[in-house]
Amino acid sequence: MNRLLAAEQLRRALQVFASTLSEDQALEIASVYPAWTAQAYYKTGDVISHGTNPVGDPQLYKVAQDHMSQDIYPPGEGTESLYTAFGLDESGYPVWAQPSGAHDAYNTGDVVNYKGTLYESLVDGNVWSPEVYAAAWKKVQDGGEPGEDIPEWVQPSGSHDAYKKGDLVRYKGKVYRSKIDGNAWAPDAYPDGWEEVVE
Image (cartoon, rainbow, N blue to C red; front, side, top):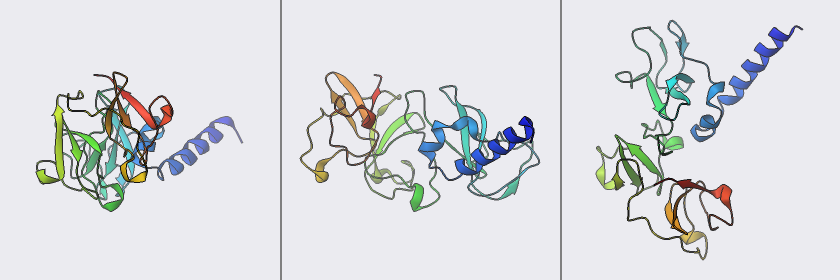
């Protein structure tokens, strides 16, 4: 088997594996996903890349309905019924994307960037945008930077008050966002559970 054929088979195997990942996992290996092309048949749930996101990584899209792509309708503004963008904004917050069901709905504590403003979900299974169902969201602040109302980190006493994925806290003068649910560790005790948010 020649190297070119082996490399192509490896690329295809990676793409098959990549199709099983969550959106968060997909963002970590965004360059593996195939680039969007015109005159291609896409199935609902396929993940493709097109252009770059604000941090310079490939912009990923989830196909929202089965269709044959056309060069006049690439992923982006105006084609949301065909492609749902997902990814991070310049500050590292997830960009709000319309969930397609319970498996990708937002949960309590998830923080998203919706049209340039950060919102925190107040309910589990949240499939509504902050415009459509405002009672399910709390505005964190405008402009993509943490606001002054972020609480200081407090040692949780159990699972009932552990931090959820997306929770923002202040710790030793810095702002951190929890990367996991059930987070009972301080940012310096378990750095993999937190990411620093630049103010």
